Image 1: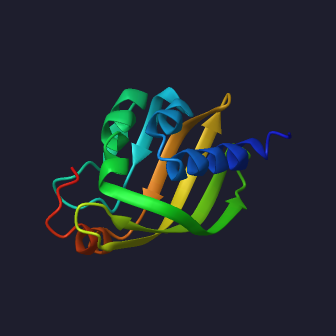
Image 2: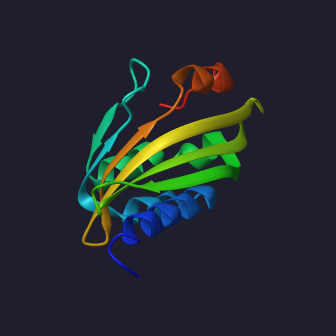
Image 3: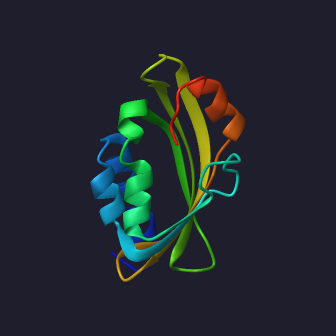
Length: 139
């Protein structure tokens, strides 16, 4: 596998872990000092997480709240930086406590160093999340 393929492969592995609801496996793909950013995070929710421990704590209860059962589209684009890819993907699922549909599209920038994710920046629609969650508390 060439260096330019490694970020795309690692991103695919992260999506596999996400779909399998294995948040520990997802976090383990990250470097100890990973920086995870959610620039469109709603007020009162984290927009930045520093470190593998922080991202695991953030994600650990996700599978109890949101059941993503399908990644229905995925495009991965290389960039001018061989360590970085951009993923455009969408999911279908539902919010477990209220059974509302959870359909979300993401744009994700992933940077890899020495076989681990070192920066993960994800853009998603906070209004769609709020509508799906309703009164369900996630954060």
